[in-house]
Amino acid sequence: MARRSQLREVCALALASEMGMGMGSEGWLDDPSLLVAIAVASSHVHLALANSNSKPPLILVLASSPPSSSLAVTTRVRPYLAQSDGSLSAIEWLPFLHHPHPVPVLAVGTTTGFLLFFSLSGHLIHKQSIYPATILTLKFRHTTPTPSPESPSDQLSLVLPGIIARFDSSHLQTMLQKWSDHTGSTTWKTSFHEQNDEQDEQENSFSNLPFQLWNVSKFGSCADAAIVGLMPPPLLELQSSQRYYCSVTIGEDSVISAYRLSEDRSRSLVGAILSRVGTATISTISSFSSIIWRREPSPTKKARPKPQSFAKASPLTCVKDPPRRGERLTLSPSGTLAAVTDSLGRILLLDTQALVVVRLWKGYRDAHCLFVEMLTKKEKSTTSSNYYGYSKNDYCLCLAIHAPRKGIIEIWQMRTGPRLLTIQCPKGSKMLQPSIRFSSSNPSYNPLEVYLLNGDSGQLFVLNRHIS
Image (cartoon, rainbow, N blue to C red; front, side, top):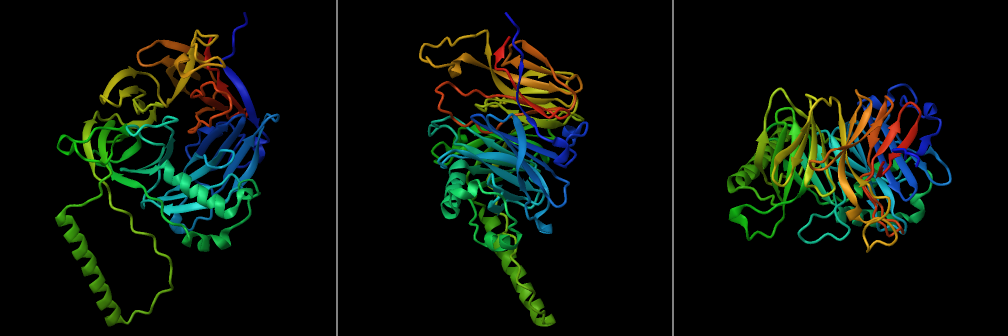
């Protein structure tokens, strides 16, 4: 019996050298200023590429659909960013589920804390100020198809230095539906046109989406973070009706930190008094100064909204081990496990419910980790209820570790299982994972998959879910 290949080619970049941003040159995927996001819907692949240093900002949207096997540029998104808006810092795909055919929507973060949403055709859907700081990462998390009241809903989380923001997916879907109803369904597929002259007027019509904001800098500024799920309230607030979330952060001062995040934004009486007194004092001083110096009225310019107050974040635990610092954090689909890479070449597997490290790997500098679901020693479905294919119970959760210095990808079974597979991968490759899994007409389970983009050849591969 022939040995099954562990990498299956999906498509390839078309004319990569002509797309700009250094694409096609050796090692272009290793550029830290490169932003990449992938979305896969049925057999359609959408790849977003941007360079945070490009002036003016440019986002390339590439798409591939059968029978074509090439990823070609379908849209060039040119966000109109004023100097106060900063430059691009993060991109991520979100699902628009209310559309007749679910389509991905591109979320973009900037260095001054603005969040923007674009359609596949490059139209600006929404723009909102979050907090005046760099948006480091955008993470969309899909939970279960039918979430219970005890489970968290789908969410978009934003990580800023020492700050976490959370948008509930229901608010995002409502916003996208309103925009689609207002502009018409043809806007999703028409070509992109310059909108810079109309954007100022358009921004004035944007209504802010509700979101939560937490300060998680108790143990230092965080480089990455994740909201892992719901957690019980404190002992003195057992009768509280509000939700509490657990978050895990990593950074330079603290390898791993954990917080209990509350939805409550109420402040103390002293804080409220000081806020009102301070505002009144500043207003009075400004009025007197304008009378004394007879200041001429300045041209009317839309001021940036004042950041909303932080909700309560209570520290739970902290692991400090200088000079080691946390670099990347990856969350499992259920949120019960997190893989953390540090500056000393170690990978820590964290149980996010018990908040303890349950496994440790050494010797993986510059590693990148992603969780993946694999079929082990199962050529046919073993579940009687799944006549048409594989069910969730047929898959086991694994951790894919890309060690670029070794030129390999290792697949380890969770939590304490063995190394199942070692895959050779060319230099200059990058592991990618869609943040959203669109349901298909096929009744079989849609597993969590990992893709590999070869920067030199432009080929996009998917890891075979079968372990040979």
